Image (cartoon, rainbow, N blue to C red; front, side):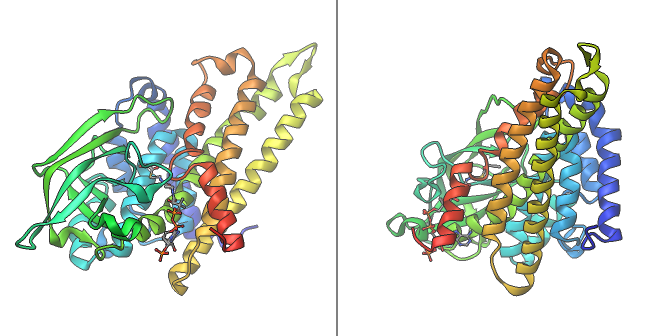
Length: 387
Ligand code: CAA
């Protein structure tokens, strides 16, 4: 039906589906319970090429396109959304940033090991007082007198994969008087002095993904680790989030599909009042509405992936398609997982089934990489040209 999905795409989807079923499904509940980072499966995902799907082969990636990334993300997230977000941050927030804005040397040194899954990448924009209003960050980077290093001081929060990351794409103010035009991006090596990991976030969902604050105290970042030009940081952050939001749409779609499939099975088997519950109209309505939302989310996510692929050729933007997909798919995932628990009744609320995990995991997709409110703001601004 979708003739843009090639045999190569089907192959990566199948690989991801089988890997998720065989390697991730048996450990997902336990990692959710303990919150332990699943380093072994993440390394294996790297060996299969899942940690740098769109990164060119010469920089350690699989050299595939944004649609391949989406198809694989859906399959992994369908089984475990924590693996999904670890994969997403490596691929888009870190991988896309360095692939798109890095120098050849930066790509060889920092991108290749992350794309191969040997090292973990992260992306750090948010601060305790700067979330949706990303342009108001306080972390400072000051060029030293010799012009060799930027000295970085500040506190960043909600950094996915920070507790295990080897390299982080960091955004800091180099010229606060210029506001968002004074933000610059840097590649941070986490084994250098002046870098510390702070408080780990005790999260509702995606519990096996590690999230923490990071602290910079006189951290000396070599000038050659600046990503792009001084003052270009905000635009880099936004362009990278355009790519990241497609990954989150795919993650949300995967979660929704898992909850939906479990609901169809349950509606076929469970009996009440002498009939299968799937024979009751109130259950039928839930299933039908789930199906429609999921199909729509899938189409919007594919549309965003195709828009990104085209934009890479034309130099255009895919901001609109990306925000539309992320907004719709994340709200669909929240709705579908809520209805799936309701349809299952008491057992849906129990930790014996993964429904409650899907529900907890779905919530974050409406929050990170831009809340639903921010996606609506982005869409409306693009529509009207007004700010
Ligand atoms: N691509 C390229 N440039 C862009 C852009 C885009 N998508 N969006 C904006 N810009 C440019 C604008 O053209 C403008 O350029 P000029 O300076 O030349 O005028 C500049 O950036 C500033 O744009 P705005 O005036 O629109 O900026 P704003 O301050 O009003 O903010 C915003 C816009 C959309 C609200 C933005 O701040 C935003 O996206 N906020 C949400 C941040 C977010 O998603 N955070 C999540 C962090 S990652 C995470 O979740 C954790 C994790 O690890 C997973």
